[in-house]
Length: 302
Image 1 (cartoon, rainbow, N blue to C red):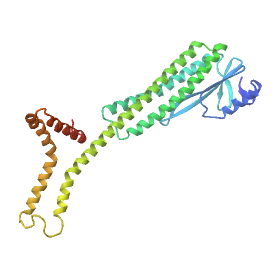
Image 2 (image 1 turned 120 degrees about the horizontal axis):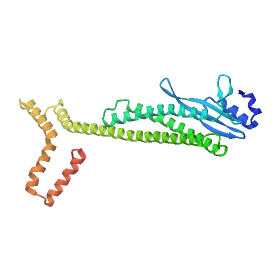
Image 3 (image 1 turned 120 degrees about the vertical axis):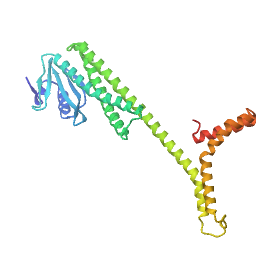
Image 4 (image 1 turned 135 degrees about the vertical axis):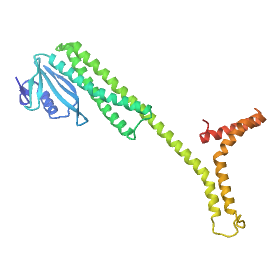
């Protein structure tokens, strides 16, 4: 026998009827369990993927006089749903498996993102993929938290009424808790991936800044010399020589070579000459420590 929204007041208290009517008008009602005298209302939310987007579906159940009803959106009535609680438990188990299929898809995406990052094969849209996964998994975590709260409410109610098989509800709760732990673990892994990705980007940025500093250090004196000799004034150095251009070019090339190889030359002198002549004297230790500080600043300690 169907129960319309108008007939609900004939079966439950007025306050319960008003609460049920208000909640039924909310299409996006979250999962919750609400007991009342003579039964309970159980609004169940499940995961769904529509047009490659994570969406939710809603099912609404009502228990009155030991009869389970399911709300029919087309007729706006509660229709009988089995003679006992077994069909409801079976329905919840089926939707749980479907939810797990969707969740496992997101977990595989996290695995793929993690493997690509550790293999340094991440794409330029890594942050977009990371953000989408973090957002969807956070939504799923909230979904499961509300779901476990509703199932716990049914379990507590069933301990007094003994309408369902307790082991079935306990198994659902256990599986849901396991799913929550998997989702939370995936979120923690995503946070770790974000930290590692940021470290890689910062390392590349530091290397680029270092290379820019080296290039600036090499060409700054060259630009200074070129600008000096390029002044349109009289009395410049070497202006009385016919081969002055070659001399200036030789000076520029010498400074360039010295800038590029000077530090390496100093390191060779430090390693093969100073150590041989001075050994581990106090003077050498001071020179060596200064050289090591210079190498650390320039990132040449490797």
